[in-house]
Image (tube, rainbow, N blue to C red):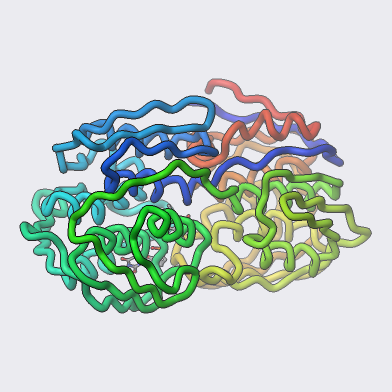
Length: 420
Ligand code: UD1
């Protein structure tokens, strides 16, 4: 197993290019199950989660090539509709094949994804919506067995809670359904918006793209002709590097970003005293005299993203005063707290609220990565911790950050990957 050795090094300096968004690429790859032609997708990040989904599609019978951030996937000859436990257990987002497989073939079996480090993460809303569209769903031996022999039928779906992959699954299911589906309380994340836009460009009539109320007119199982397209930039990777600039009080420039997708993150950084220069596709963060404390509440887009909560917690350890972070989306997304405390952070937890008092003089130690974003918070803290920090179990980071250590090295950080 690999671990990461990081030495304190401030300030960082320079510029890096942001990769394509993992969370946009995943549904877009699942979406190729709805295509009648081979589909090329550019700007795909070379991270483990993407390779996992490609392996899943290959097991189902798809063929693909993946070179230089471009994937070409052909699902035309796919006949197998069983997504097996060995792959699904490694990545919850595998559930994204459920809607497309069912709507195209009228039957499928997808292993239940199970729990994960950041909470229970049920999929009841996905299943309820598919049932409303006419599917019969049973759980057998750990598998979701879904049947709709005559295909799915459009329905009025009302999500009790906003769900990102749930919205993506139902939009894809509705794309080939018979008749019209409406989704009330749809997720508005940029990754969902891109999925809707690509489907729209492929001939699916969708109204309300980018809003919480979507109307999708299905093609009644006519497969789609899809053109090639590029994945949007990764707003969470960009936010993480902005926090790296902030915690080390550096001037850093990010290129290949979409600043509009980062408005709440940039607003919080500005509240903390940092100045960001923004152009159409770049953001430059500048140092500040004093890092001010903040209050953060995680919310669905366009609110402050839960996927940036851990990184801001690391940053708050260096603010002058007391910050609070309230996690509203996931019940157990504070696994990084105990590891940050090992580095010397002053953090108190009370239910869903963390109170961070700074500035703390952090000192390097051995810490354990627990989930994808928690791991990046440890990387940020390690950049300012005295001495060396060794982060173990970094396979979590490899799931979602492309070339993490070489990007940081470009900025001057002292970071090395070693084997346990
Ligand atoms: C996606 C992102 C993840 C991000 C999260 C919230 C991907 C691959 N992952 O995860 O990085 O942290 O959105 O922005 O895009 N819920 C239910 N029942 C369901 C579905 C969800 O109760 O059927 C609950 C969840 O437990 C959670 C909340 O709804 O409390 C939001 O979850 P959801 O938006 O579905 O997260 P994911 O799509 O899994």
